[in-house]
View 1 (tube, rainbow, N blue to C red):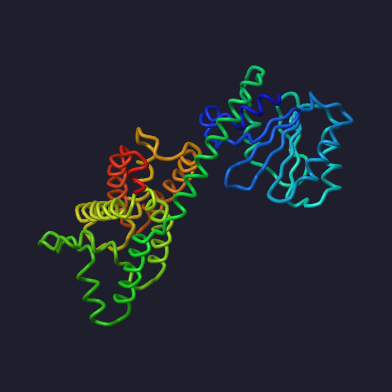
View 2 (view 1 turned 135 degrees about the horizontal axis):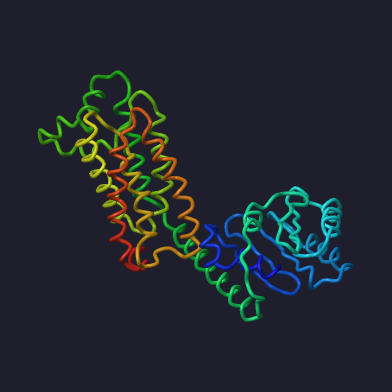
Length: 356
């Protein structure tokens, strides 16, 4: 049972098929396997009851709890009978930091049962469909440990490398949007004239005022700051992530092309005045999908799996929002498709060249 749990939690091939993020197998010493989920502060210690004498179980649990200092710690015992939950409950009742602990028992049939404390959804999901596997040899375990160690180091180096670079272009674009919002808000006649000069007006575009296909992305609803705030938070979140990877030149090209594609789509299909950075923001979402879809591995495996799951949720929510009244969905979809296609080209380049 311990080996089935180990594979289900930490083998990237198994977790990828199940749509889960793998845990990193940090250490393995009979009867104990130690896992962690990068960036979550969660750790799991899995004890194999089959390699423990009954009287040794509580002593092992107490040693683990005594060593725990910070973060969320979960203890799971694989195997054993009805006495195991009693031991876990007693240990939980007598320990410090109970609000940071969780206890589980996995019986011989593979049923994952929560016993006490915090809950670990990652373990509970694994318990619903444990894979069948042959007993693991020391070489098998060493291979999983090494794979996890390598993925963890790659992900940590990736995060450190991107965190060192300040997103100048992203912050500059946000500053321009905020400035234009201030200049075009209110009842001043000059503010209204500037707004009407820069917005995406299909009639004016057809008369040759092509700058509107991009300038509209720097404007926002004059009557409410909500539109501006939502778009600027999205722009910063995505732009600050992508700018260190792509560089300012490529990110600027991506924003320009996405905004223009969104403006063209809006002009062709919407038929009314449009403003907002949503086309460019959707371009950044599409670009992230494009970088994940490229043949060259643009992101470390651990980062890529986490990104895919989060982006799918973001995309579903934003597609639903796009069909609400007064939302320019054509601009959204036009920008997203353009960003995706452009990023497929960027993804053909080695990541070292893109980080320059």
